[in-house]
Image (cartoon, rainbow, N blue to C red; front, side, top):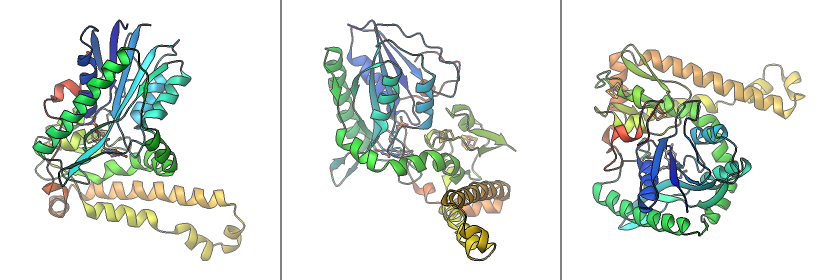
Length: 352
Ligand SMILES: Cc1cc2nc3c(=O)[nH]c(=O)nc-3n(C[C@H](O)[C@H](O)[C@H](O)COP(=O)(O)O)c2cc1C
Ligand code: SF4
Ligand code: SF4
């Protein structure tokens, strides 16, 4: 029997915290502590040899988010401490049906990293929670959220009881195979997503400059410039800032999306090879062509970000982008019953 359940949660909108909490509460006879995964470089959690570690985190781009991957690298080596992986994924409901998300490699990637560090994997199972990607879709309504929550709570309780009773549970082998087939998308997401996705956010004119988004960001990716949030290049798209902003001021504009897509997709290497310096470029190795396009992509993203940052200081520009934004019509999502204080604490945090 375990002496303690030590839960690690990375969460944007509370889903993964809730899953870790359900798990720990399902095993009444074992005390539990939950810790937030964040950018803090030091792991200040005491892990006992008889602990059961529970990791819960969102699926992003069919894999695990950077923050989670980096956190696992920072964990100490182990000599067989037991661990359970519970990635959450985008459950949704349509026409009265509950549809599952797709975790891809999110569970088994972290399982593999932990296994390399000497941890014993006792369970891997994804849990469907209401999708929180409100940059691309509206938040689910209360009724649908409650239905998904009830199913998820029952699933997590069963898992917790099975694992603490000695069973080993490996689920999601089909999503894992799909995730491996989609590994290119996951890789692109991890490389490009960080650079671009946060840059699609902007604060509309209703922003009061309260700074809450900056304080709660688990990646410390927001800086306040001139009383308004400015998104840097390290965001994991956890969606906390957008969904917890008290004014619902954080929007995504399709204009910005098109601008990025257009600029990034310009075939500069083709132009270079076709016109300027044809002789040199035609004998250049493929890797060089790739590097030129890559450097161009990074440079153009940085340039567009810089441009937008300055343009958005002009109120009419911010008003225009907000007026054309699809997200101003979207309901926001935060896990019901989960308080902001419970999930987004300062780095020198206390257990929940
Ligand atoms: C940027 C982004 C990418 C996502 N990618 C996936 C995905 O590939 N598959 C999936 O099932 N859910 C995906 N989701 C949904 C979240 O994983 C899901 O809603 C999760 O429960 C959110 O948990 P949290 O509130 O703890 O952050 C994505 C969400 C975001 C914001
Ligand atoms: S939380 Fe909202 S209102 Fe407050 S600074 Fe951020 S964007 Fe502005
Ligand atoms: S900037 Fe927003 S979406 Fe990105 S990591 Fe921070 S809180 Fe999450």
